Each structure stands twice: as C-alpha cells, then as structure tokens.
Image 1 (spheres, rainbow, N blue to C red):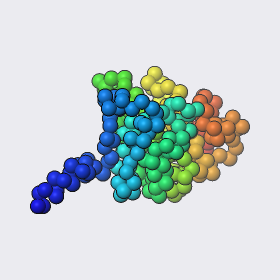
Image 2: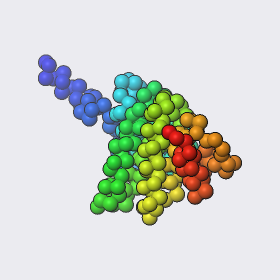
Image 3: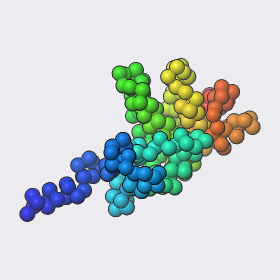
Image 4: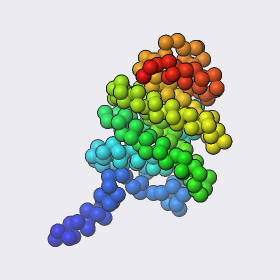
Length: 236
C-alpha cells in the first residue's frame, strides 16, 4: 500500500521530483502549446496552483519565474521593469515573488550565482537563442531587485553589497560592449542607481538622471557616468 501511495504522489505531484520548482504542464514550442490559440489561454495554463505556490520556497520560486514560458513578453513594454510589473498582474508567480519578505536575499544570491557564470556562458558554444535567454534571465533578476518593495527587504550592508556587485557587472558590460546591448546596460545601470537612491547616496542629481530613475528609459553614457560618480563619492 505504501508503494502505491508513493507512486500515486509522484504521478499526481510531479513537483516533488524536481525539488520544489513548478513544472509547467505545457512546454513552449510543443504542439499542445501551438494549439493554444489566444494569449489569455497561454497565460491561464501557466498559472501555478495556489497550494503549490504558497508552499514553494523563494529560491525555487525564483527559478520557476525564470522558467515562465511567457517571460519574453517583458520586451513588449517600454522597459523590462515595466514588463515585470505588467506580467505580475497576469502571472501569479511574478506576483508572489514581489510579495515575499525574503525576495531580496534570494534574488541577490541568484544574481551572484549568475554573475560568476556570465562570462563563461557568453563565450561558450551555446547558440544565440540560448545566450539570449541567459541575458534575459539576468535582466529579469536585476529588474526584480530594482523594485522598491524588494529593496525595502534589505538593510544597509546588503544594499552596499548589491551596489558593489552591480558596479562589477556594469564594468564588465561596458568593457565587453560587443556582447551587450542597450537593454542590458539599462537594467544594470537602473539597478545600481535605484540601490544608491535607496541608500540616499545622491547628494546632487541631474534632472535627466532623476527622470531615468523614475521612468527607466534607455540609458546613455552621461547617465551611466553620473551614477558611477555617485557610487565613487558615496564612501560605502
């Protein structure tokens, strides 16, 4: 009887096989996916069952969000952060992640893990689509971290560590600008700026940079230089 019960649990709750990450019932690109004729049908089939969502730890919730089949829709908005905000109104995984009290700690951990592997992944033999997904995941993590509600779940030392890590990422991207486009630079610069802003480290700020930190429009060199200067003057 015990064997039958265990087998039934595995069949009914595949989530137990894969740690606590949610395995989406229909994979993007499959025939079943192609048979979903509307965007709403795709959104509906990707919702995480409430009982599973509430019991999923935040580490696995982050990975589940990065596996979201419709995550590329963030590019349909003015910027990735706006995309995350809009998708959180449609997908309960994004919504739940933004509400978790330990979201900052675990998103920062994920950022550090991806930062270590960023160079190796981009010089590997992965194809363009795979590298594009790596860059999207990186930008999504940065965008989640840039939300004020997420930054509020950190203390000064944690924000200092985030600012330092984000500066390293920005330096790397600027030194390898043949691999990173304007969207990638924007998400990193925005995160650095929002972190410094949360730490009250802008003694003076130009109108253009203030607008950038409010609207997250495409970054330019002047804004990047101002935010880096603010970091250098911050005496973290």
